[in-house]
Image (cartoon, chains in turn brown, orange):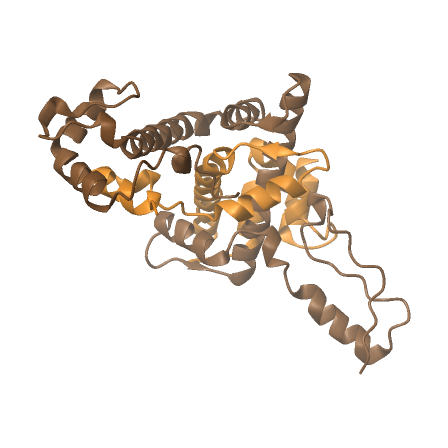
Length: 202
Length: 117
């Protein structure tokens, strides 16, 4: 059986076409149409969040005995993608108006505020701040070059970057570990370039 | 070679796992963001991270509202129509109405949407 594709569905389909709906090619025979329709119901997984993750979040809310119909899961899956697109378009518009090119977390938060998701702002701000504090402590701890570290532990742990007060205590406890890392495994004056802006997408 | 992941665990052992692995895949979030519009070009690394949490909150809210409707129907299985009703009755979910009501002639969701105008 030779299956000929008609016009391929546009890759940049707008979000309102979230339900995968591949039109059958104009010259398809009856048998081929059925196969096309079958393929049409297969979701392009790339444009949705994984269903397992979604179910996990839902189950954390629902009572243990609750059941969820498959089509309910699927429609929620579609709603999430629509949500992301909806907010992103608003955030992107904000960027353009302010002559910026990069969508920042602040743009995302502002977009949510203006679109009515004000309830999310507080938990998201807390989450973002926690993440940034985590990242800062990661980066600070990875920067120390041998010449900046004094052996002997305690508050003798010095480094080139300004440390926030809250981090000093952590470092005090872990100085031995860090010193072992530096003087044990360190192959040479390796700089901190490896940890700048760790972007998982690059 | 430095292993940022392993090292950060050393320091964050005592911290709650909130900033650990995210519940939703960041690369896919970024992909959906890029697809949302032709002129979405650059996205900061942190934006998908905010979205991973935001989507979690979104799913939680939608699920809670849908489940209330399931309960009103004295059922234990959440149906697609329950989700649809939750969307229709929540103002901030207006952008989803077209997604949940595909057949305006049938289905309880369509009837409800029609009633709300």
